[in-house]
Image 1 (cartoon, rainbow, N blue to C red):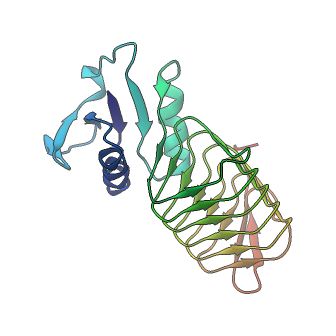
Image 2 (tube, rainbow, N blue to C red; image 1 turned 120 degrees about the vertical axis):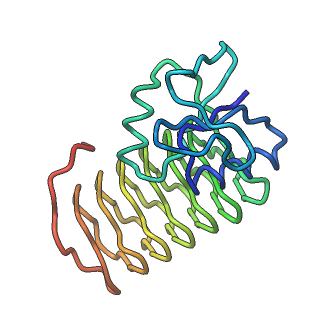
Length: 206
């Protein structure tokens, strides 16, 4: 069985993927004040969670930082993955790390590496030889051209474009609709077209 940790809208998208893959979901796990049923399946508190040796968990939380925190608390669990059947994933040396999810319409081209607990959101495009660290979120309709490297915990917001060969530092944030033509330092915030580095903050993703 698969458990989804986080009863949220993001969790509903993952639930839909798993339903399409005919993979049964036992419950959402969420310690917030949630209704007893969400998306048609039960919601339980983490204190009641007693997984069996074959059970898997996917952390269904959109925030990179929160997803890392929860995954750390669940260390030792088996983490599942969810790849929508209408995503296009190359069979040529492309890898997807544990706990990661790939939404409908996403494209992962040859020699792409996706780290652990990443979100490749709806219709995102990741071209050849891109390397994504752990806990990265590539938002809907974002485009990573070839040979882009993305550090741990970076967030590539909706509709943004990263030109070939650019490096995005750990914990960086790329604003919606931004076109990134230059490397972005760890903790950097880049917005606009062409992208402009607005600030750099300390980051614990290094």
